[in-house]
Length: 140
Image (cartoon, rainbow, N blue to C red; front, side, top):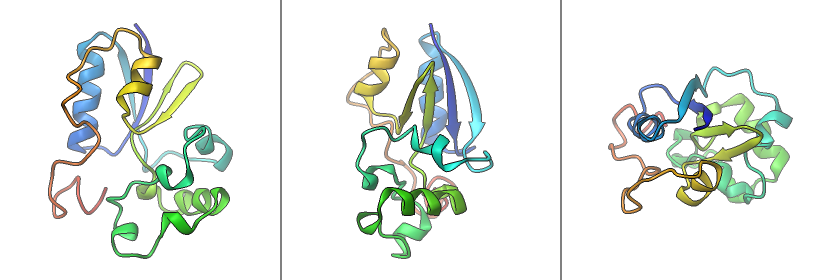
């Protein structure tokens, strides 16, 4: 089984479910607070690999919802600069499994990193199930 360094927003229902799924199948999860981590641009960039810049973002973040940040209009450096200032913009979870880094809980990518991860593919583990007014909504 693997050790997963799991950068989350504490008390987010989806991050809690994602961590539970990983531990239920035997992986060790080391949870870290995504919002208080001392990120550096080059370190953060590794989690996004070949994803388009627009897929680096958490679309539940207030700045995106209110139109203050438009991910489609940003280049990689602009996106990283904004994320360093406002970590709520970062898509989560960020996970490090050995040397592999991932942004978001994409089933295929997580499975590729953690062979043997069994889960119900019908279950949505990335979209927030709560409304905008809850702890996982407007402060995502």
